[in-house]
Structure formats: structure tokens, C-alpha cells
Image 1 (tube, rainbow, N blue to C red):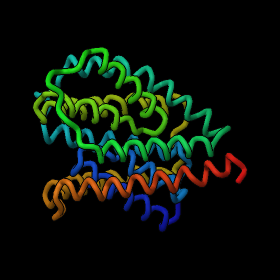
Image 2 (image 1 turned 90 degrees about the horizontal axis):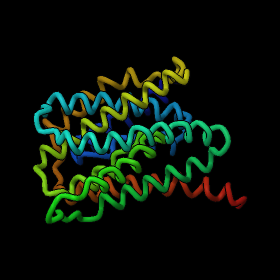
Image 3 (image 1 turned 90 degrees about the vertical axis):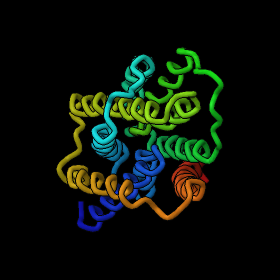
Length: 255
């Protein structure tokens, strides 16, 4: 990786960490969207790097917030559904990366656009906690997305933040789920012999950047209201999704 490409990767990682810390999600979406948009890394390598940095970010947030408020029953439900389907999503990525690169970009672009719309929609708290089956269902969707692109957060964020639960319990349960998913995904990468070559191990250099920007977001939050910040993140994600999916879709259609 050239110095210019490394600088671009570190910048993207820093932006993603800052957005994740302020909004509570979107780390993987921002990284995967911008990396794919500029063609910085092959998507499987990018997903591996995103997984590593997501784990760093989740670990730092967990250590900062503690582990005492994790909703253990809900966490078990989510992980029982998401971890097996994460394996399915991972091997689906391997197949599509080899045979359907443009189709893979269309799928990623659609996921990014749908997730950005989810961020823009005002979530209303439910009067009572959803059924166990609903957590399993959202866990399945999260697992497939996590296996494909290390972006399993949006379905769980949407579902959990509608529950009548304390915010601290929601946040720490989600962080625990994200961390566990990335441990499994990174293990799959290692066991499959698909660890990115040294030229793309920029993720290691990005670890201090992610840690620094996570701290900076807590210490110096942006001078924007929560609503304004959501608009900025929504526009960033939606446009990157469109820019990624549209050219690939046109190529698939032979236009």
C-alpha cells in the first residue's frame, strides 16, 4: 500500500471511529462504503480490516462503559442466531468476491442506503419488550450482514433502541454482541487462510487512530445538535451507497 493509500485508509478509519462514538453505530458502514467507493482494498480484505478495527472500537467502549449492564438473556438470543448466520455470510462473501464482484458492490450499496434510511427514521419506544423470537430474527439478519461486510450493527441497533430498556443496558449489550461477532469473523478469516497480505495490514497502523478518535469524540463532541449530526451521517452514507451501487448495477445490466 502506497503512502497516499495508507493516509486515505487512516483518515477513513478515524472518521468512522468518530461517527461510531457519537452516533452509536455506523463504523463498519462508513469504512466499507468509503473504502469500496474509492477502490482502496478488495472487499474481503476491507471487511477483515473493518472487523479488526470494529473489535478494537468495541473493546475500548466496553472497557470505558463497563460490563455490568449487559442484558445477558437477550445477548444469548442474538448470538445464538447471529453467529451461525455470520459463517454463512462470510462464505457467501468469498463466493461472490470471486465470481460476482459487481453484484457484491450492489448488495453493499443497498445495505448502506437502507441503513442510512434507518438512521434518519425516528424510532419510537415500544410499550413493552419484544418477543424472544424477534431478537432471534434480527440476529439472523445481523449475522448475514456481519459475515458479508462486517456491518452487522444496523438491524440490532434498530431493534434494541426501540425496547423499553435503559440506554446503558442497550449500548453495552450491543457492544458485547459486536465484539463477539468480530472475534468469530476474524477467526474465520484466519482459519480460511485469508489474512490480508502485509501490504494491506494497514489495520494495525489504524488501531491507535481509532482509539484516538474514539477518545476525541468523547472529549470534544461536534458543535452540532443530535438531529443535525444524524442528517450529516445520513447524507454521507446514502450518497456513498448510491455511488457504489449505481455504477455496478449499470455494468451488470450492460449499460
